[in-house]
Image (cartoon, rainbow, N blue to C red; front, side, top):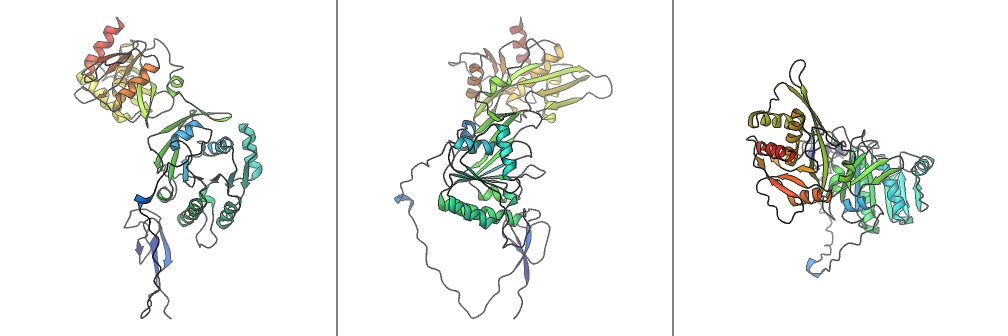
Length: 450
């Protein structure tokens, strides 16, 4: 009998190759090629024909909205689209120490139902210590310290909990596979088997996944295609605020975010982030400007601070924290060329308070006004906010969801808002000041200060 020739298969796109290679030619992923025997080809024999499956017409279905289960954590439910959908598979990723396991423990307590907590990294005593440190009581949580996939599946079928939490998915191991625990094949097979049980028993599962050096969920991206919802927890480890973002959601929108504050007792919900971010904003200090920016469908108000000082040695420095440094250089060039500000011999430092990173151009006008305010050492008028993108000609351009941004400013008590020229006053309680370019914006601030 002729031994079948070994082939190599990509675990990401199932492409086959006669030899091993580091990168798949089909999907371009690295490290996804594994060895596997090619199926033997038999001649002169016909394979058995399977029976046809049962089809269903969508016109005959009365699809009712999925009955979601609340976790008791409003920000978490908001990100999911209103709560947990029975039978769904959720993947929670984030950097080490960002608060993934802490959020999972709080979900087990807030759910108020039987939860199966599977951990391959910690013992029951260690997890109990974390519960005690957070001050959480969860008498309905059943802990399972196991990494064997068949054992985990059997336990789920026997207990039928209201929620299964796996911390983490990279620790599960199927003994029938030759690869090591944590490999791409093991992670993918374990997720597929868990998904089959979840759909069959209508048991939702929350899988905690590690991330790679580039910030993507380890796998690479294999799990994101399999699960129903991908949640990512973001934030600066040196700051307390955490943002929970849904990058994929089959049962809801992907533009919802949840905001948390990391304290000693765990994650605390922040229902009004703007008020919290501006609570410590200094009064009558130059170089400070308030800008509304969008995270998902929510508008937040942040304090953008600029510090302009004469260059002492060498070339002028342009440093930023929480804002793109290249974008800052572009705006400085616009202020120098179009507004006539002498910034060629000045160091410019920019900071977004709170540890957030702003990537949208809708805050350009506020950044320009903060830099100009620090250069002239003249504070921005109190209760004044800025909305608008700045072009290379110095013009102020319109931005998306401007009504939502204006509403957030009004809610926080801002009475004057500089906006693009095509925005009309309407029924807004705040005074909207349309400006066509940065020069008009600077003139409007000068008149308001007088």
